[in-house]
Structure formats: structure tokens, C-alpha cells
Image (cartoon, rainbow, N blue to C red; front, side, top):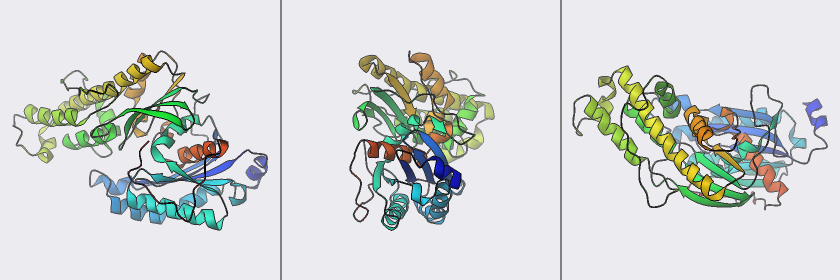
Length: 363
């Protein structure tokens, strides 16, 4: 700890990021918005698996148990004296989960006399792509940060958005989902065909063994060319599974999995993944052709999906540098990175005595 502290005494800024919006309790240390020193994550995912999704009460209790040890482990890299500011997710997310992180960050900001920055969780996902250096051995980061104008495809369990960034803190939301986020749709389809939670990795693994053109899955057609809808394709999968086993729409969804063969599950997974990924890639391509950004990034948990990365790389005519998959899911590094840029660009700090959570925060 002492050696690292000495190395960074001439830093521009060192920020602690705290994330607790859903089922991951996370903290990280980032230098100057580009160098990752620590990234600690405690997940309660295993506790939710039996329920097929996140249970808010369980997630909140897990945050209470984990948040102090997680922060202490992240901070031991540099020590409290070296930290210039604290950044914390205050929305969007689960109310109880956000409350644990924000209350802890507010308390630390007061007791440690550090400025506090309130972070939009969805916006922060984009900023994970600005990390280009690390002392951690098991991370593969981009060689260069994105350039503006920047087109960001944000895809996760709670969000599906397409955003054009002209500069830091100057962006336009082009479109978003009207119903299910893409990650949520993956979870629901996985549940229908009996694959384990979380659905994204389960669908991706099964899809490798299936035929992506075996079944026809419809794409939603919307008036706004940059908006998404995944409720239709999800329902189409339900009807398809019922049809495959020779039952009508009244057959209970929770009984489908036991009647489907492994090959049928793999083909359904592959067909759904292809259409879901094509949906977001096609709209990203439309935005690229209209706005001609210098960089394109994908962010959020679904950004780790290899089929999504493949399709985007095949269609976008400029190189895309992807961040490490561990930085696609919820983490403190993305929060700390955005906190660094808030400091650098003189964005106002939050009042630790009045900051409130905002579960429904949008971009």
C-alpha cells in the first residue's frame, strides 16, 4: 500500500467508486479516469438464482453485509489519504439497494471529508470504455479511449438505449426500449425453456449448440427507428415452445421446459439470440450512418455477449475496441471513472447531507 501511495502522490485525481444498484456490491479505485487500480465485486446472484430473478429484499440485505468489506478491500490499494473524491450510484436501480450504497457514501464523504459525486448508473456503463490502463493482471482493456462524437449502445438487464455523445455530459438519447430491456428478455426466454438464471450467459451458451435460423422469430416494427421492443419476440418464443410440444396457448409456461428436448432448447436459444442481437445492431447501424461518429461503444451486461460483438464488428466500418467483460456488468470502476470526469470537467459535487436516491433516473 505504501509503495502505491508514493507512486500516485503526483496524480491528477484518485476516485473511489461505489456501486449498489442491483445485486452486485462493488467498489473500485480509478486514477485520472483511465487507470484502474482496484475493482472489488461481491455478488448475491447465487441467492437469486432459485427465484429466476433478483429479489429486491434479498439484494438489499446482501449489500448491507458486503458493502464495508468491499470498500475496505478496494481502498487498501492506496489508502484513504490518497483518495480525492467519492462517486456513488444514486440511480437508476432498486430502491433498497441504492439506499445502502448512497447512505454509505454520504457517511464516508462527511467522515473522511471528501467531495461526493452522484452518478447515473446507465451513463456510467459507457465510461467503463474509457479505462485503458490497469495494474490488475486479469483485465484486457482497450488501447485507446473512445473519441467524440461517440455512439453508445447501452444494453443490460434493465436498459436498452442508443445514445449520441457529442462530448462529456453533452448527449442525446436517440431511442430506448418501450417495454423489456434486452437483458430482461434474455432472462425471460431462458426461464421459458428451462435454462438457469441469469439468462444472458445461459442463452449464449445454448445458442452455440443450436441453429440460429431453425425458427422464425419476429422483430418489432416501431414508428421511432431508434426505439426497441422485446415483448413481442419474447411472447413469440412462448408460443413457439407451446407449438413445438403440440400444445396451445393455454399450456402453462412453467411446464414447457420438461417437454422440450436439449436440441430444441438450443435451437430456440440460438434463434432468439440472433433476432435480439440483430434488432439492436440494425438500429446502431442506422444511427452510425446518420451521425458518422468517430467511435462506437457497447456498454452494460449484454455487451459481454460475443454474438453481439461479432455482429457489430462485422457491420460497423470503424474498429471497435471492447472493454473487458468484467467491466460490462455492474462494477465500481465505471462509477469511479465517471466521477473522475465529473471532477475534471468541474461538474458540481453532491451535498452529502441532502443527496437522495432516484430509482427511476433516466438519461
